[in-house]
Image (cartoon, rainbow, N blue to C red):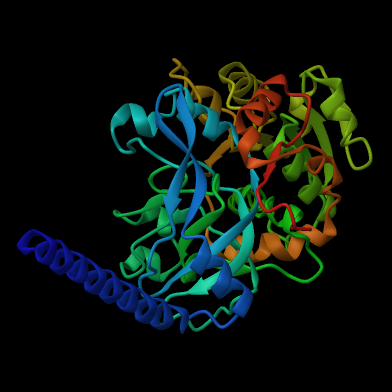
Amino acid sequence: MAARERRLGSLAREIARYRYHKAVGIVKGILDSRNITNPSTRAELYYKRSFPAVVIRGPHDAAIEERSIPTLKPGEILVRVAYEGICATDLEILEGRLGYYKSGMAKYPIVPGHESSGTVVSLGKKVKNLDEGERVVVECIQGCGVCAACLVDNAIACRERGEVGVIGIDGGYAAYLVTRARYAHKVPNDVTLAQAALAEPLAVVIKGLRRLGASSGTTGARRCAVVGAGTIGHLAARVLAQRGHNVTVFDREPARLSLLSDIATTSTSLAGLDGFDWLVEATGDQSMLTALLERSATGATLLLLGLPYAHHNFSFESIVGFDRTVVGSVGSSGADFEEALATLPLLDTSPFLKAHYPLEEFERAWSAVRTRAHLKVMLKIDASAA
């Protein structure tokens, strides 16, 4: 009899404990949901508290894992990722070749992906500039937000900077992405979410061209050479042409050059480099850089957008003696993202939008990148996205 009473007492305590935790969970859910005004979103997040993400745990070690939807901190937003552009940097992280990982500046594990577009589904406290349901893109380079560099929109100079999908901040190879609202930008109505995933590489190009002196307000057509017809070179050529400059693009692959025949002269032979005022190097190939440094015209300006350039012995006499200027550029700012979003409708982006893979086929997508058969390969993570 006593044993039976003990069992009944233990069962009563378990029932009470269960009901207590259930009540606490319901109250917490109600309180959390007050920041979620869309009923369908609230239901989605209530019943689906985890999501898939590709995690790179070390060189040549990547797999899909389940991640928990986090509680947002003040100033943060939760974005349902629609499209994620695949960049060569993602493969360098996978293969352990990226300098940040060699130096210890970045560490595994990391969810890669820094070319993301999506829809805001939840807001943390103090977020005033965005609403649920708005379509956004997310800046790659993010600073502390309060230092002198961050206050002038120069996060790349922040000592505490991170990079989405690269250094310390999980990226867009996932169903959801958390970011600070200050680094999210609204997508214009005339830009699709697929197009918007190009905002990050386009912002990189726009910053570089600004440093070159080829801002949108520049007057007078210049003779421009773009070396490399990959994503960055292609976008650079289109922006330069859209701004009224005369563009010639050099690349070894005729198929890539053919995608630019509507706006540029193209060549598979790196000849006539002394005929240009501005030269954009977009390959990261050391031999290409050397050719530009040695064979460009007196007074020419060179913009270096390619990475990584190898160590190489070089005489700077060819720069000084021929009055050349060499400009390096990497990353982008919030202002560059805004300009990129405004520029996208002015460009033909169709060559970039032909290869989409679902998240679970990320390895196939990486293989497609390696074949170089497509100008851009994207993950379409939200199947319902336009």
